[in-house]
Picture (cartoon, rainbow, N blue to C red):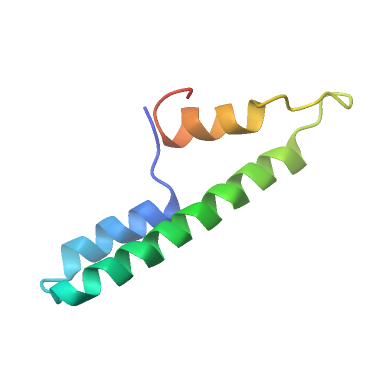
Length: 76
């Protein structure tokens, strides 16, 4: 079962509260949300890497696997 990130939670909550957004603003909003999700993904991966310590072992993709498994519901 995947978890929501903080950005995904925020988007869900805003969708519940906002009744109307002009059509001409959707592309701009979508771009901002995608930028925030990308930034958050990098922060999660960086935190994993900084906290990962197995006697100097290389992550070897473990950080991406962790992110995908935890927040995307799979290991892609």
